[in-house]
Amino acid sequence: MQLDLTQHPCFNAEARHSAARIHLPVAPRCNVQCNFCDRQYDCINESRPGVTSAVLTPRQALHYLDRAMEKVEAIKVVGIAGPGDPFASAEETIETMRLVRERYPEMLLCVASNGLETALWARELAEIQVSHVTITVNAVDPEIGAKIYSWIRFGPRLLRGVDGARALLERQREAVSELSRRGVTVKVNTIAMPGVNDHHVADVAREMASLGADIMNCIPMYPVAGTPFESLGEMPPGKMAELRRETGKHLPQMLHCTRCRADAAGMLGEAQSPELVELLRTTAAGPMNPGERRPYAAVASQEGMLINQHVGEASRFWIFEPRPDGPPNLVESREAPEAGTGATRWYDLAEMLGDCAVVFASGVGQTPRRILERSGVRVVEAVGLANEAVDAWGRTGELPRGMQRLFQGCGRGCSGPGGGCA
Image (cartoon, rainbow, N blue to C red; front, top):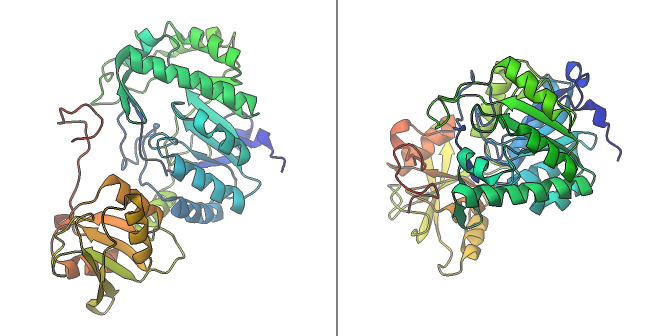
C-alpha cells in the first residue's frame, strides 16, 4: 500500500505538531561500544538515546502498542531505536516490525541503527515497507573513528582501534547505499564531539550524500556520567549552528531533533507520560506472549524443593501451578530432552514447557535463554525454595530481591575485553 511519508515528525518539521511517534524497546543488545554511551534501563527523568524503562518481547510490544494507540490517537509512526542496536537483536526487531505491519498496515515504520549489521537486513526492511532508517555515522576517517569507539563486535570478531572503526565504516557505507537503492529514506545522524570529530562532520555529510542519504541530523553529544567522554562537555549552540551550515551544503538538515529515548511515546519534545511508562512496565512484567494461556511454572531442581540446577544440567523440570488462595500445587515432573543435540535440545525443551509462563533455574546459557524466551517461556535465574518463587511470581509477577540471581554485565568493575566474561 502507499504510505503517507509526510506524517513522519522527524523527517517533516510540520508533522511534529500533529503526528506522534512511539518507540518499541525490543532490542537490548548492542554491537558497538561508543565512548559517549552508557545504556540505562530505568531512568524516567533522562531523555536521551539508549534509555528505556523496560524491554519488551515482540508480542509484548504489539500488545503495548495496541493499548498505547487507545491513549494516543495521533500515533502515526512506530520506531525501534534500542535500547541497544536493532540489528544486534535483529530477529526481535524484524518480528516486531512484521507484527506491527500486519496489525496496522497504514503505520509508518522506522529504525535507528549504528549501521554495522543493517545492510544484512535491507531486503527484509524494504519488504516490510520500513520507510525511514536512521544510520549514526560519526566519522568517515578510521583514525577519528578509533577515538570514538571502544570496540566493535561483528559476529564472533571483536575489533578495536582503527581496525574496528574501519570495519564499522565499511558496513555503514554499504547500509546507506543498499537502503537508498531499495527506495528507503535514509537519515544520517552525526554526533558532534568537541575536539574529537567537530572539525570532520562536513566530511561525513559530503560522503553520505554521495552514497544516497536523504537528510542529516547533526546533533551535539550528550555528556553522560561514567563514560570516557563525560568531561568533553556539550557543543555550544553557536558552534552547532556553524556546523549545520557547513553540513547543509551537502545534505538537508533536520533541526528539531529531541534526542529521543528508546521508549519515547507522544509528540516530539513532550515529556514521558507516566501513564504510558506504567503501561510499558506492566506489559514487560506480564506474559511473554500476551493473550496466550500458560498456567504453569517450571523449576530446574534436583528434588523439586530447591531451585538448584542450571537449565543445561537439569535432567527433569518440576511443574507447579500457582494458586491465588494457597501455596502452589506441584503438578508433575517432566524429563528434560536428551543432551548432545545442540540447539534442537532447547527447541524441544521450549515445546515441552509450552504450557509454562516461566522457568526458574540457578543459571542459563545465552542460546537456551534466547530460544526459550522467543518461544514464550520467560527464564528467571533464582535461588531459594521452589514453591516460594512460584508463589511470589504468581501473585506479583516478580521475585523478592533476595531470591534473584543478578548478572552484572561486562563494564564497570570488569577487566575483561568487553566481549562477555569467560
